[in-house]
Length: 224
Length: 222
Image (cartoon, rainbow over all chains, first blue to last red; front, side, top):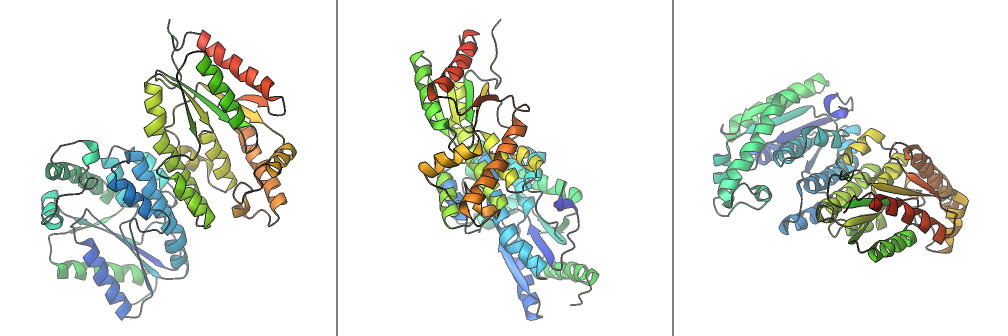
């Protein structure tokens, strides 16, 4: 493997949060961003499937339910590559703290849960820099479902309906997200993701994540 | 004993490769007609035509939004979409699928744009092996004349995005030469049937048609 397993040696710091929907990662990242800004750090935020180049196409294709697992995987890789080259790499070179809501690990979890070969998708993303801190928020599928679908049915792809696991979107969501979680759990060891319990309070998770980041910054000679 | 197709499906996969202006489309059309005349079902698919992604590529090129990695991945996504939605279903139903370009095009272009060849190969490693690959071999000076005389020099086809030269003509020459080098190094690895592209249209068609006939005579689709 290339960059994803080697330290990047750039001036900046790369932090990513991972976990299935409803695990609270976006809340934690927003809190972290506000704090870092308030103490005068240069911060850049980037999120999954948001590039100008392709995100609208992917969203449209998802609406039409017309993506095979491999096409789904490659379109997300396009989005990621666009942000990696235009946003993340320049910011790291310029010394920013880059906060990424989801990173390559999301692809490894979701695509492999869809039946894409694990080594194949890892190679596709091997141009990605290794994060200085990668936090995985662990939650069970049932709690996730209760949090995100209290007023709507699960969407086609988030429920993994393309895999025809069940005709019931709720049941399909449980099975599919269970598979995604299994992939995340494997990556805790493989990529050194730091696992936090998503059921802990917002406050206690934020305290932990700030401690972890302070430690990472201290190693780079930055005291916050 | 029944012969098996290389791709393992019922149908045949036949590819015509070559750089821009090498005469691929003309030959594809002739081959399509001659195979149809033999009462076989033919499906044609061209590079960068998926309903999903082709427009995105054109739009992004127009606005200069692509870097070498997104360029590679977008073409790979286009290919995956066509392969899974058109090509493989047609092969499963026993069609002869004629392709204008295959992943060899991506290998040549992406490597010239500085991508690691193993990384690019991995993107396409699931692509079925064609039963026949015709490669139209053309010297750069003739390619240049043909393209200038027809479509004119295009920014990406001239490799202007790679920054070899700001002069269109020089850039095209360097870029196409580098692509040809890549094609040459693929010839034996992927069993290209290399055809001199300067031969007459009818001569080239005869060579292709004879090869297809040989394959059909083996009873492969019987």
